[in-house]
View 1 (cartoon, rainbow, N blue to C red):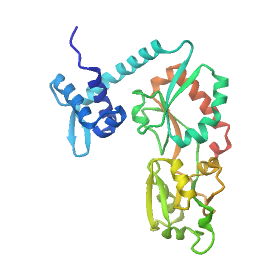
View 2 (view 1 turned 45 degrees about the vertical axis):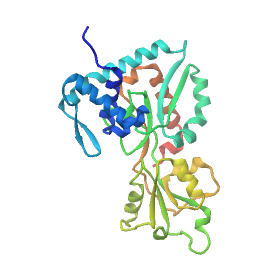
View 3 (view 1 turned 120 degrees about the vertical axis):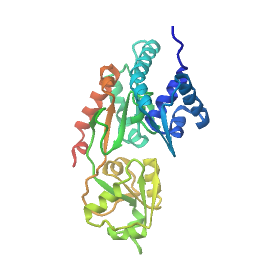
View 4 (view 1 turned 90 degrees about the horizontal axis):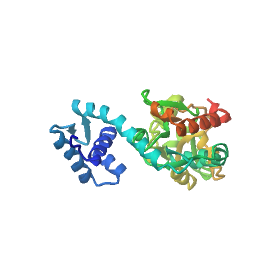
Length: 300
């Protein structure tokens, strides 16, 4: 039997190829960047050829790297499935789900008793880490993401349509210096989520106020922290209607009675092959039915 490279080196190669960054891949694998680089270099030495074009701040697959990724990815997925089938507990069906923390707490967890009642054999391994789409088939079976659109090579289902809501503390709408019109945002700090960076631009464009510039823009990778900061009166969070409604926080109010459709939606996504597995199909069907019957999911 021909000698094979270490599986850890192949795993490192696949992560870097999918994320395009040594740093991001190292975070996913809980390694230091130098350690991950050594694994990739070990695979390149084993093969006797480079697999990436190194550019400042990024790693881009070359032709050999693209060919290797295309070849090994299905086999890695098959290996994961084989191990999962051997380690599954009795009749338990397990789904590795990537999901944003705010969606999980506001819109998933409140309905999990219903899921458990309908499918007691289905168990979820919940992962709130970043880069969920990139990790499909490599640590995740499916993901719920917030995006404009999903790679057409993946299976995806849009769960909702939403409106943009500028959300602030009630105290910011009262007294001297209150924020009452969009123009007043020039005196305020705006909060944007890193997964929705164009929310403010879309809002201003819909109003014909492209030149509007807030006092400052702070970026968050946590929707819950955005809501908490807004509730403390620290700024205006540009989020979704569902975020405010599900927060049920009396300190928070919507600013401006203006209807602007959000370019971002929540999506369920997985690799097409994953739909062949019982766990993914079971969860997808339940989730889609849940959102199809929710009035807010149908709101434009």
